[in-house]
Length: 454
Image 1: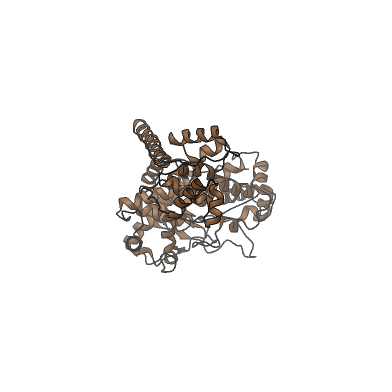
Image 2: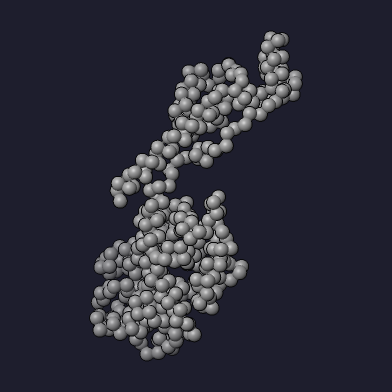
């Protein structure tokens, strides 16, 4: 007999209901019947062997991926990770064995840890009994760092045990005798409870609501920079005002810093993790870091999602040549040895390369410096670079095309294209100007399309 999957119900709760309906004496027997494994279905956070579960229940609750999305907290932990990572972790839970799954998720090294006690709201339990006939564990109450019910604005209570008298794992429900014996937080002031409720609501949004577009680390970082700028936490050069940001965080969460995991996050040695997230992050961060930044900078998921979508539409999608364009003009470098080498080669009828070897100056350096000064353009014997090919490169550069795209279309190396740009007198300035105009026009079209769409 299979129970109905109720709103926001965890898979552990579903299995507990099935256990009550089956009237089995041992919970491991129910787990074996549903998952083909005596332990897989007894894990309250990440049950595994989901392919076997779908097969044994005749896909009554959907596919394994559907079950992960609807009945576990995994989407919360993978919301700010690449899509392939989330898919791979879901596939692990579908397998008959999921060894070291929490290590793969990075929970043991996170500020939250890897142990999540069952938590429930008594008022929610009473409402569940009135509406559905049974109280069950809600997904949004099991999220890390959630100590209050966002619906009833009351502290959650947690269960200190999940074992029977023989120390075997068992199925428990919120309204079982003695299960909700202790409060998750004690001595929490009213202001702190308000903060906890606000973070709980945002955590639920992160769990239930995907990002409006595909996750991109640079896009996310620019979204945070947008929020920092609106708070006056960026300098004119675009650098983060670190001390002011840390002060803002400490003031905003002062009333919950005595409760885990916030006591760990806001300690002097770990608060820099929040700063690293808005600089140049080199690794994936726990979702709780994102939770605090989103709450601080955007005060809610909807505003954050809107800015994230805006950054996706406005962020320049050009190649690395954009970074090579500088506002400062290149200053000509005077080198009398280069001019002397050319003059001596002309007077004596010798090649420039032989004169360069005699003087002790690099041949390529002579060519580049003479061209950069707007002086002599040396006609070189063609090798791979024929004269026709060189003219096509000059034409493309004059049109402002990127050096990378020219390199791909002609088959020349990037350094060769760059050398032509620098060695041809006046071409580098023309290319910079044309390149700037192309990028500007493309961004204007993006801006116009975005305004027209919205």
